[in-house]
Length: 547
Ligand code: NA7
Image (cartoon, rainbow, N blue to C red):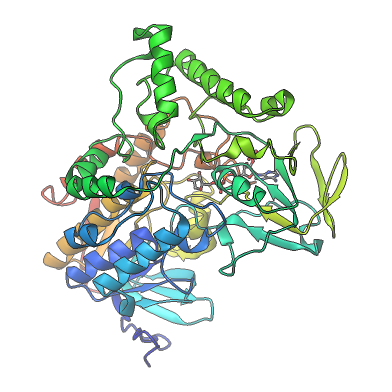
């Protein structure tokens, strides 16, 4: 029986394969993975829960959603045709443009026919006798493949905090990470926003322009600094097009995949005046240069970090008219960059508008959500719309929710409740033939550059296995343990806050551990690039008789 997209169903007990490889997720990494495996001649299909491609850029369509990485450093670099034909209109593209770009790529490469939308995988079970995976969709359909690539993203499971009364609220409620396709009408409405992470910081100034009243419920302020976005002029466009090779080279030879040049200087090698000149320059530069092009010890030396944080605090004080409010917007529990610092556009100026107010939840915590709005210890306020900008169950959320069952019936979620163990962020002990294009232990930074390394590796590995007649690929437990130690070690190199979605601390009950790989992207890329000629160490290959 064939489905709409040509992926056939598996009969009970039958071991016929629906595809050699099934990719889960049509975001940035899934699209690239599909392209590479199709090019390499694999029988590959992709399934996606949404109705179209985009992943993050499909679900996060809230007002103000946009890149924090430069557009031209975020897109794909593997095709000169794609690079030549696509023109980014802004230095940091908005959600609609990015979604359009990903659709352009998919159509240009002719990948759509290999994709099956509205297909959410709820379970993945390794069938040991046949060494194949059986994927179960929401409606109970089963698909069988030899290999599975999970391209489910690191920020794909929205987190709705269990604040009492949430379900009884009668107004409109939206999560930034699950935004409706139809535009939300904010004009003249009374709106609450809960959460001031990167999403809230992007949304708040946009929504503030339209609403009658906006109340921001803040628990922890972040170190926000200007994105300094702008339209790409014709001259800039020509320069970008002419220098794509250099842009790519800069990203792939950097620590975290961003285009900005790293500084070689230590903060206190310069005089205070010189330091302030650099800080001022960085403040007016684009995107993550404040982090990347800062002194090399801004993120490792507490004094250097405190000084730059104070510089940013002064900027906040200068931009917010009410000095008491300004202090509430300045973090006191962590320094700049110890949590992912959001990039903003007129965020602080929004608080100077008469229709915008801040509620500091440390002073007046939320007691309950009511039918009409939000009740804090200071009383109840009614709202037409509540926006939950409360983040995601990052890195592990998607696969923890899927019932992933590996060798010996072990469940991935249970394994992870004792801490995440991976091999290179690409494989999991006890889950053969299963790969992650972007999950826990992925390089932290400009995500497409990080997932590209994973996708290249997985593609090379599958080709190597095919060439050598292997149908079974499993990481060795020693290799997994060693790599996981390395991830833990890397997490100690910089000053990092204990409170961050990178550590899983935003989700009640989640194991607290650093979930990304904080090592150098360049070194990781070099290591992954060498795997092919080394015969993919750390892995047991096989073609057991039973397979
Ligand atoms: P974040 O950065 O996890 O931010 C979530 C925000 O929601 C943050 O301000 C939280 O406060 C707040 N939050 C979470 N739960 C509550 C409760 N129960 N009450 C009040 N406030 C709460 O998610 P974003 O979507 O903004 O950004 C995620 C990433 O997406 C971002 O880093 C980019 O890479 C893109 P807290 O800080 O926990 O006190």
